[in-house]
Length: 205
Image (tube, rainbow, N blue to C red; front, side):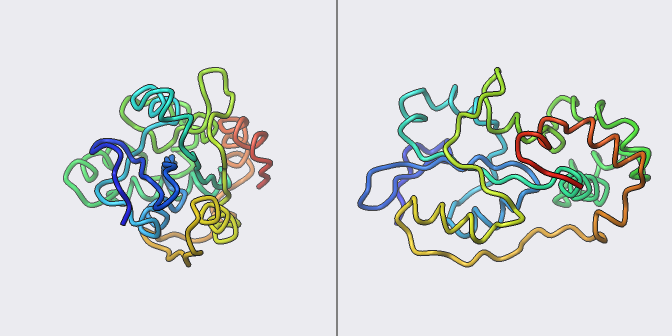
């Protein structure tokens, strides 16, 4: 059984090893599946790594194994957009929030910078920001890719001295392939908006 270090932070002691881990839950990167596989209880913790470091303290942060998963920015944005316009988790708050997003994905892309900077909305924040400090320097130990999710999650399990766990796909958005949704303009708008993600994590359309 995993022992909670504190009742507030997503950081757990690894059995017989005494090392904690911190999962940086980047939204729309299979975080629910990963949390489920690791047995993390409670609601998702959608805080940037630098915020967790500040909240948890430098010593605990540095001594923990810190990891996150990222996703092709064009694919992630489609998933995030449809999640929002379809009512999110179904709560009244998410249903109300859905009304503020354009019905058209093309129209949404025209305003992407506006939505990236909305207060209390981390769904569209660049993935580089999730794993870096204020100077864009990565401050976590491992970044896996959704495109290689099982292989990269096996690396996490190995680091945590746990047997490999087969991930299930939960919380899947309902939409067709992202490549069939973009046109040349929206493809380029996303390339500009998420330039840092594309360069840092070596993604292409």
